[in-house]
Length: 152
Figure (cartoon, rainbow, N blue to C red):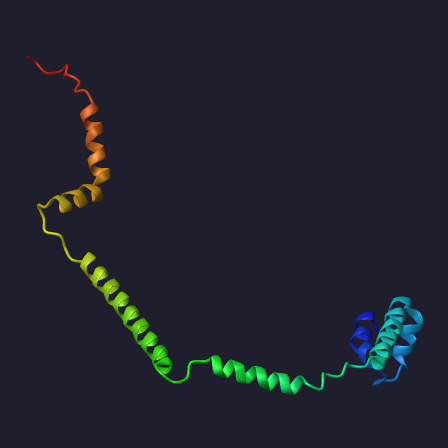
């Protein structure tokens, strides 16, 4: 038996629910660490058995009932208190629905085609063809070499 296996049954051994016999006893005789842990657990269980829980005050129930009556008296009696939560839920639902609607409207409005010839469409065209237009600058920088083979 290994230390891990004995540690799994150690609470039962300490409480006396399982007898210390066979492989358990052999392991406890050979392993000083496990034997000390079992001894400490048995001492702890013995101390817990001796402990007495304190008795509650004889006036505990009376004070508790009085406190409950005070708290119930503080709570709003009837009125519109029941009406607040449904109104809050309805307002929250309307806000969520409006935000979803606005989001869908904006998404659909972004996909509409822009009419050609406007400033916005020109800028979009320039942005799409940036690489093409940047090559034109390279062409402007090239100097034209005169053709020597040509006869004037």
